[in-house]
Length: 264
Image (cartoon, rainbow, N blue to C red; front, side):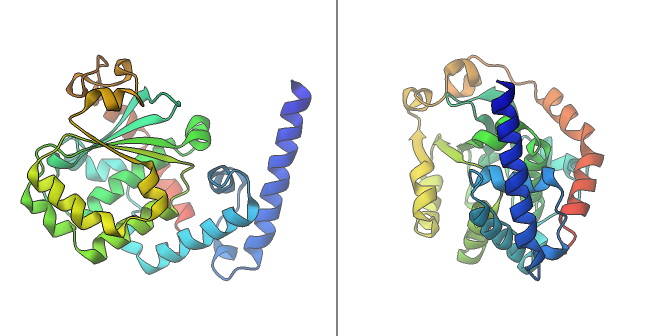
């Protein structure tokens, strides 16, 4: 067992070293921090394919430079007033493949009172909150997109430009895998899905499952014991405790953003 762990450690160090060397020759990445812990985020995402990790880093930082407003340097405390409206919540529960469950409550968003950049920054903060978690690095994230109570106001954020930009963000995040489950429905949601769907690439289309109100279908992917009652489960989510733990990491998240987003 010790020999296996040692071999894995040596292989990781080798990949990190190769990625560092590639970064030195890139006009953007040569200025990016190259500590092992940070580079492992990209290497885990690409299953330690160094060339693919290098390409992902380039795509990530090119996007950051082109769209700096989509990359916050603020921590979760600065968005406390939005977070506590339960627009996004990282639960302590996992899907059947061990991915932690992240719930997006689209109906709790109000584009007339919120800025899209603030909502995106909350996603950034939650991802940074999880970034050093080995399970997250190895397995990625299970996302439940709850479209209940969605209103016409969401059309404000569904322009072709904003859809493309958001999807570019999703595709260049160093996250191993997504499993996305769309639940609940209404006429407005179905209309918005038809607008967004043509912009979604084939890879993302394969990992998005539309369950709507079919809870048995959702339970095939997530045990009901890991879901709250609103999704016909039995798990209880202590939102206040989740947010308390989130806000405790505010300083660390801010420092990480200042370090890793030094190109903007």
